[in-house]
Image 1 (tube, rainbow, N blue to C red):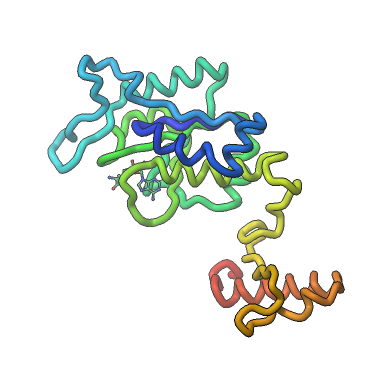
Image 2 (tube, helix red, strand yellow):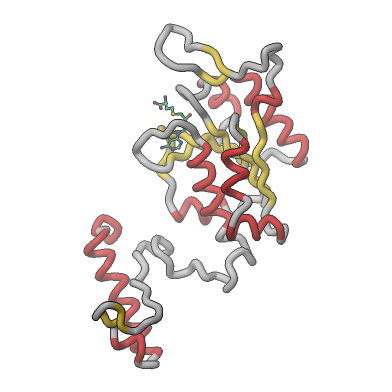
Length: 225
Ligand code: SAH
């Protein structure tokens, strides 16, 4: 899968994506992730990519031309038009279900806004979908793009060590996952649940299911509705 991140701050993305599971997935060629600098595509002689809003107001607005040309360069290089997503607090809140669907696509491009956001016309002309990481506002779309990139990449075949290790995790089937414990069996007087030491797999499976339901009821009752 190809994931293209269109940003004014590619360094923010590269620093995060080079590490840990996502870094390994890239070196194994299970995913190709590229952060592109929108500024490289501006035709402005001062290399500007933003301007004050028409009609007044605070902040700066990212201009259409550099974004559109950057996206068209991505299309040319990939030889196909990736599904184009604008990371935006006005988008649909991201869910595991949407992550599963996006992970099936051959390529996606993620537009990161900054400052006040981007000129509405480039969204109308080119963007397929707006996605939010929650009902709050950040300074830029880079962290949301990294969130989405991470959530998608870990579902790609071969990325997690055990295939399908993500099945049964929180939000996979609408429930939260059961609690986890590791050695020692007693820590500062607190013992792990007996059933986990019993070696009885059927009982353990039943315990996991009960815990999932109990936790979801207690922590996120809205998920059960
Ligand atoms: N003026 C805009 C917010 C701009 S925030 C408004 O009120 O709707 C600057 C940029 O950060 C946005 O263009 C977007 O790319 C990103 N961003 C901020 N909060 C976000 C969120 N919750 N989810 C996804 N992207 C977000």
